Amino acid sequence: MAKWRGILSVAGGELASATFDDADNLWIQFNTPDIIQRIAPDGSRRTFQLSTRDAVQHRIIVGPDGRVWFTELDSDKVGYIVPE
Image 1 (cartoon, rainbow, N blue to C red):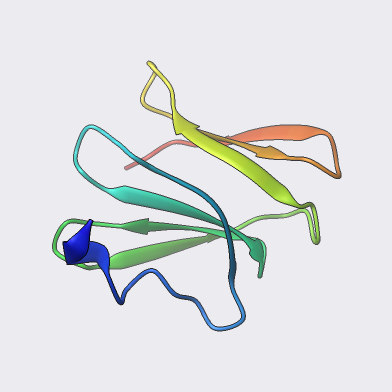
Image 2: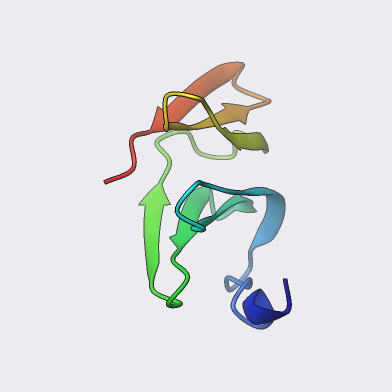
């Protein structure tokens, strides 16, 4: 985890959950500002803006199908991202 220190922050961000996929990408779910970020082992980032505002992000996991599944607690929704 030491190699991730210092890059886990987003301005105004509130961390909700995090997980790693099989390619060692770190997936981070933030309550504020309603985003999920993928951070590759080389430090590059990709940000996914979620369509539900203020949904209270709750959990994030990588499923056996390779999709990144997440829950939105206040909106009672489950969503997923298909990694490239």
